[in-house]
Image (cartoon, rainbow, N blue to C red; front, top):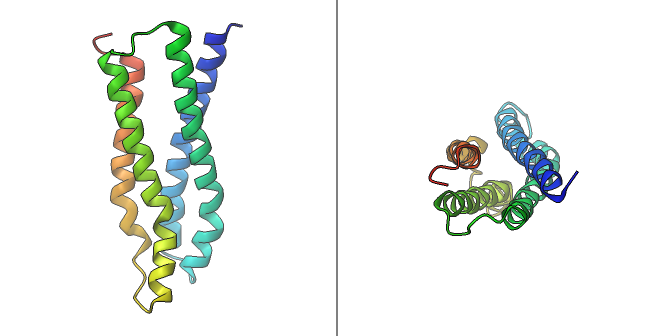
Length: 144
């Protein structure tokens, strides 16, 4: 098995982990709504998902860079530029979602009413759309 095949396997597995962690975070957020103590429940549940999401995101990026280098793909290809732009937007939204529990805790410490955990759901929908977009770009490679 060559370097390209190993990088491709790593890329696909880390992309699956990225998608699974997104789905898991949305499930956890929806479960927090019915919890008696949503902040404590979220803190326990979200930590491992955030770690998986960040590790998978970095592995997707590193393996993508490796695949581009090993395969000798032109960095100027539009599908590569669009994929990287979608990936960076995806990870930025993930950071907003990951920090939402901390912002809610800070709001409650200041005596403000904590925001509903489901307020991050639109971010998850946008993130899911970006995930589909860059997955399509990786598979279809339009114009390349």
